[in-house]
Image (spheres, one colour):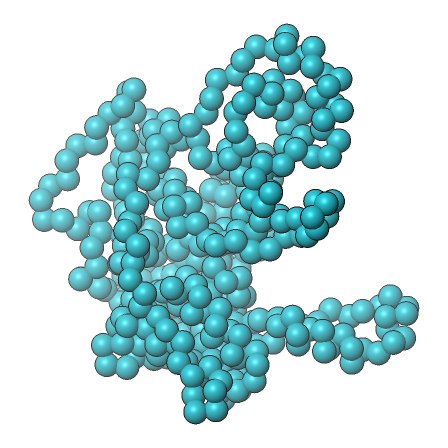
Length: 385
């Protein structure tokens, strides 16, 4: 069945052979942790690399002050003292880091420059078991590898005994990847966005003898979980130690209600996708589109907020297939298929009164009228809904 726990094909004989072991092993307690990635081991804190001084300080990346945005620390009344559970504070306040939100979107506002925030982010992902696959200081991007969240495995008697010894016997059939994007504010502080992408393994035949991986929806709850965990890394070391037990066992205090649909795809007179309309002002739409691009797996090479422009790369499967065909028979025969480079596009975010319009341009800045431009708009619209 799709999306369910899978026991690998050679497990059942192993379970039969090791049944005695299950009877002799002691029961292991359950864990309340929502995160258990094992792509890498935890690492020591990283020093700030010297090349981080090259992070761009251009106004293109600056986010202006937004006095109307609500945050956990912006209320006029003094914050109540955190309630302790088992000796540890639940969701403790961090003086220089706070989770802000606008609608259903969350991000981490940190009172440190991006150079320092980047170093903390690079330390954070390996420390929870996620190796870093891509890092781009100039764009403020850190992306993890695909990994399985072992915390989703059920803790039945077999899992608590044999499965603990032979952990690879079990698979959730799901993989996760996270992208962190850091933007510099006008005050030289940082805004940190975390986006989640998911894949699920599904059977491709009724005999269930073959599978394939396909995308699954992003998980806003896991994004919120990671933002909360990351916020604690900006607390003083003593506060991190005290807060760690609560962060490991606590879940999100409340789940945001489903947001109304604010984006819709608009077609032109020729029937092609012309733009995506967003019923929100530019400031909020800019952040939404950035998160949509991250969740959609686009490679964001650069961005210019003053011009409302994201510079992205996208490899359309149909375009890739056509390029492979052009390489000819002999290239395939010799096994020398050169890498197909992703196409360059520009995603334009423009204010339209109290709303915002999103269009796709080619690398020269002209409207992308081909099928690939249509697909990009469809993907952006799906991520915005």
